[in-house]
Image (cartoon, rainbow, N blue to C red; front, side, top):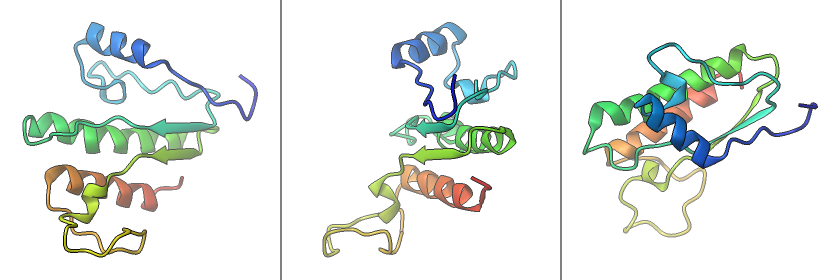
Length: 130
């Protein structure tokens, strides 16, 4: 790859790899596999388990553990220095009584495990070297 190119992995390929390994996420693969970041400039992170109440331990591993692992791997990478992280409105908690629109400066008060996990990831990313 040339500098400035964004490496894309097709969703079907990821799904096939996950099914084959019977593991939820490449970044925390039990056999020690690492994210393929060689020559990658940026990562778009969209992976999450949206209903952590159903599988709390797995959700924490995927939603928080894998994100922290990815950040650590990116910090060690000489090229992968930009991360686009998809957070969630869940970090704001119950919003029915709030005046729209929600803004970056709106206080966060997550009321669900998912919102708390996304907020933990946001905080870790802000504290990282990325």
